[in-house]
Length: 168
Image 1: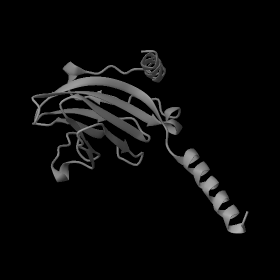
Image 2 (image 1 turned 120 degrees about the vertical axis):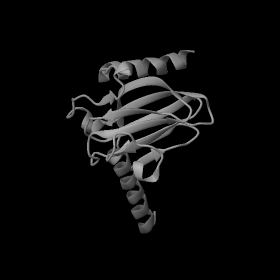
Image 3 (image 1 turned 45 degrees about the vertical axis):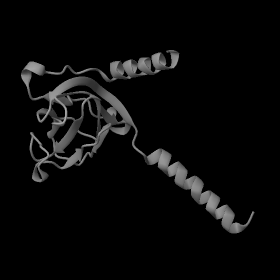
């Protein structure tokens, strides 16, 4: 083996190790489903500190997500959000620990569809999951208040879904 080949191999191994050990992995905190009319918003308030990931999957129609650390009711207007994901598929947003809390979360139903049905998964970086146990997520409409689920219950349900998918 040539000296430069050895150096390249060591460098690539070190790079792979750094990536696997420094990349954030997320632990699910809560999962819920909802419906939103076309051209309308539903708002949530994120209170939990740490690196948070929000995954929004449109089950029917097209729901998009807008995040703001400045306003609790973000919209698609350019000055009214800090982060956005408005794809036609799964929307994923990573909210850094540095964002000021509470964080406003707006889920928007695209007007091309009369109604959009979505599934939302809130996850926390595994390094933050143990150190941070306060309430994480509240819905701004008291009539539609979402119940908090324990981390273990959410993990159990997700593992059960995977097992059922494999068996079926």
